[in-house]
Image 1: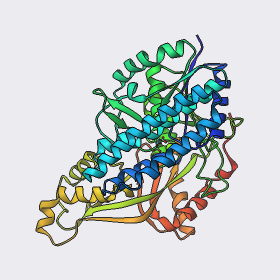
Image 2: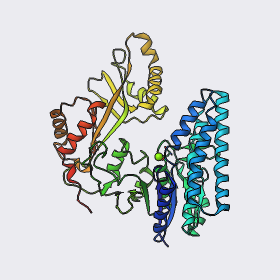
Image 3: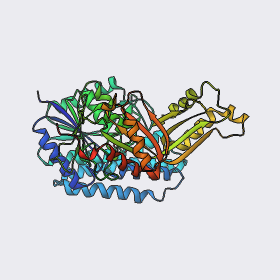
Length: 474
Ligand code: ASP
Ligand code: MG
């Protein structure tokens, strides 16, 4: 039996009719070798537009809705017209687009009427973009003579009810995937599944978090027992550093799940943080490839990465983060500061990116995405309300305008001197290091620096570890 491959195409890869046509060609050539399941993101920009629209509606405003809906319709219908020749087919798909848009508009009208945006409604709205793009991609694949259908992931990926950051229930998802997709795959039809979204067992729509289509792809790969998952995006693969910040950055041909997870975790823009979770235990490889340059082989992520000899394989940086500090007189000596702080963060599912505590235990600090700052500070203030009430000193403070820079590589383990070289290189550049963390796994040394010195730090470290020389090809 032919092997099965799940291919995910990101927002820029399906950003216009031309891009979608390119996607269809990639699928067509892959379908000659293997059975293919496609996962798609919304056309680029659409999710942002929908989320912004939802927040605007929540203020009671609704006059902007006809224009928003009109813009979204125009964008998708223009792609449809460029992609599909047959008029009956076009009408059918235009009908699907109009149905989705009408539903979105009703949800946004309701939001404006109530002046309230519930997480549940936000999920139903923000997942609309994938429901609009999937029929276009399926149609483009059909245009090339293959058979393809759009499948809403609400019928396939079963999640918990944590709106905005839902997690899959794998046993149920496996059952649904078998029931909804297996017969299509066996018949040689290419299912085009909406990324990013799922539904609870009761059918309430959820989303897997921003950038969640990557995660959708590996969830489906694991559920269907696919031999590989390919994440098609707009970069050549995993890089030694973000090439926009370090122009000498090179593509890494092979890395391990561990290394990739460190990079994903720290915001390498190519992966949703949970992407590797469903496939790494089964050892199923994940490829990162560029849909605009399919001739490039990309990066292969698997159980065994490949050594580049030097220990450090890549650098990563994450901006738009906030350093939160919990400390001060009322807190010294409390034994449950960590438990209460992280309990509060866990309750809101904040993505805690880095944690540091000095041995004096006077304060702990951790880094979260700036988008979580407000909620996190409120949650911590209420977690420590009794102590704060007794003191006049502020116990919870937040500092934005920082960035995390991390040095990553599985083979750093046991190589002495990596930390020393890291600090010396930054010292020579005059970079002030605000906080430091290294896990005992030794795959990653992370530093919090001022946002303004992030790029300088990356350049210095890239040079120090000679990453511009690249990693030898497999
Ligand atoms: N469309 C969603 C987002 O923009 C999911 C994704 O692109 O992966 O976050
Ligand atoms: Mg996207």
